[in-house]
Image 1 (cartoon, rainbow, N blue to C red):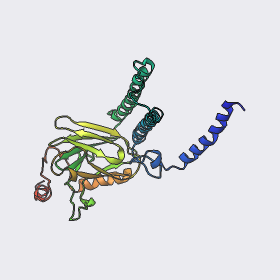
Image 2: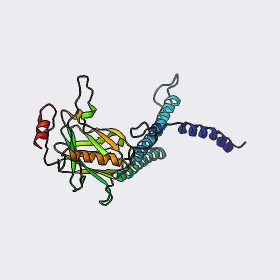
Image 3: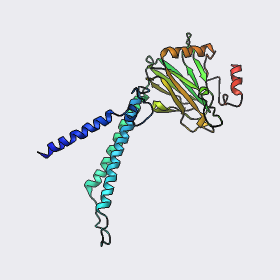
Image 4: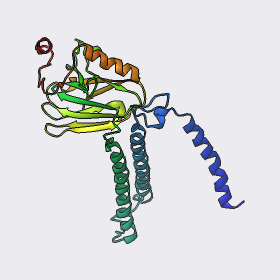
Length: 300
């Protein structure tokens, strides 16, 4: 039997075994155990799949390069080890142009390839919706050390409504009261734009399961456009060291049906949280333990 046919027949069971192994993997395993995926296979946003593929693909390439490099190093250490009775230095080789070109070209190709795929994915994530495409616009306002969320054009009269947050409240054992965390509510399968503002220092808006984060600066507003595609509750936090209570700058994200989203906006309007929050509240006014939050609520 020709050698090529032997190789072909030997490759069949290997391919079949690999296919069976991959078919048995959960969506979480297939995406490198990254957050943003569960047993349903539905990612958290329209961007999560692409970001996960970029991450996993990069690691696969780097692992292959690592295995080849480690293999060559071990091979050289074993084959060219000093034998019994040998002394002195081995014959020194210089100016092997094919090898030097190879060692220069391959890393360059890898770096350019990884850069190209990263730039392509980043451009897709950073592309904003056109003005007539935006279905939900929200302003997320970062402050030391909490979050305010303002839902634009939420009332029948076109006014915004808002919710104001305080920093996380740990108990004596360090457990966080999730009910008191600021909560961002998003409607599923809608084109969302979140405008990102900071009230004091540099912060970073990070929804962990969405696999993306963006910095927030004074005087430079960022925005992020995406579609939430799976209902659920997801954790968010500040990803930029921003002061003493940075670790307490947490929030939750609830992706809900459109009806639940509209009901939530209605509850904010009923509570009197109508208007532009960004100009009325400033740094540290909602710091727990100071009484400032209660004073602000009474004076609003």
